[in-house]
Amino acid sequence: MTTFQTPPKPVQPRLSEVPSPEGRFGAFGGQYVPETLMAALSQLEQVYDSVRHDRAFWDELRGLFATLVGRPTPLYKATRLTAHASEVSRKQGNQGQAATIWLKREDLAHTGAHKINNTLGQGLLTKRMGKKRIIAETGAGQHGVASATAAAHLGLQCDVYMGAEDVRRQRLNVIRMKMLGARVIEVDSGSRTLKDATNEAMRDWMGSVEGTHYIIGSVVGPHPFPMIVRDFQSIIGTEAKAQSLRHIGRLPDAIVACVGGGSNAAGMFYPFVDDAKVQLVGVEAGGRSPQPGQHAATLSHGAPGVLHGSLSYVLQDSNGQTADVHSCSAGLDYPGVGPEHSYWKDAGRVTYTAAGDDQALDAMTLLARTEGIIPALETSHALAESVRLASTMKSDQHVLVCCSGRGDKDVEEATRLLELRSRGS
Image (cartoon, rainbow, N blue to C red; front, side):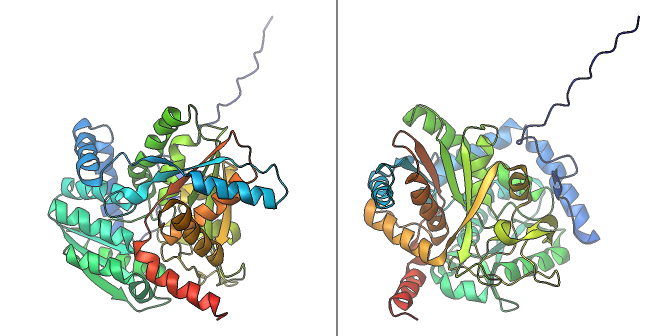
């Protein structure tokens, strides 16, 4: 008698087991670039594959993290911010208590944001490839400053593309880049913001690829960039996980991070994506309103499309062209998002929401006045959501926020916007 066994159910891959060898995060990712860049991407992939398990490479990078960056960055218990969230809870008729809010202090990393984690890693890759020049795009200026810092430390030439509007509102970081020896190339085309700076950097790379490495600043672009940037930024979540176990005694109940391209969020979320009990929340730029052109909430309002070399969610107009966007935050003012975030959205693993300009400005002022910490406008979007979320939770729960950057660069622009708001302009 022949017996038949029921075939085993296929094992679902863990969410952390991406991308595929072809650079796919589920349906997203890939390489949508001109033929002139394929050799450079192949070289980068081969070099990164060669160092992924190279102890000497990671020892060198960890050494830089410790001595130059100042890692590990601390986990900070925001007691007065938590008290404010409890007050919000009382006003809303809830239990009058809130979850404890903790900050992962990437604002205390050298150069003032998480961006340095990636630029030092890619700077070391540049040297492994024997290249002498790096280029970068920047919106808020933090990636530009971090790229200039890595170049100065490693002895590389550095050119940074930056939209003219961002040059205006991030003047301090322009000065810092120049002081570090970088050339800042102002971009006057299009909306004169991050998308346009990225366009120009891609054009430069196509014409200089033999001696130049393009340090993409977020988890966007063609494979292997989203994977590489995520891996270098995962130091944030890896540290936060160990610190949570030490300070809280367990993993947090929820983690919140802002999302533009999405590198700080990817770095924070990735070590937790297989921990199903930890709620993950990404906060996009809600801008002035949900109307087209008035926000940069790609995952909330976009659709799959190709932008800057990969398939991901993209904000598009009725003709399928990349839409105009707006945010008070130069670092979130981008019409696309990393393909892994698109994968997490469709998988239902991460909840994506949005905070508007006014909410971010209020959160920036709130953290400054409750904790003595001035956050970046990007971070302020995550802070706004963290207070709202904590106010709906129990007092024995914990919310961890990626404090992705400090607000020195934003104080002039934030003051201008707050004054305009107070005058009703």
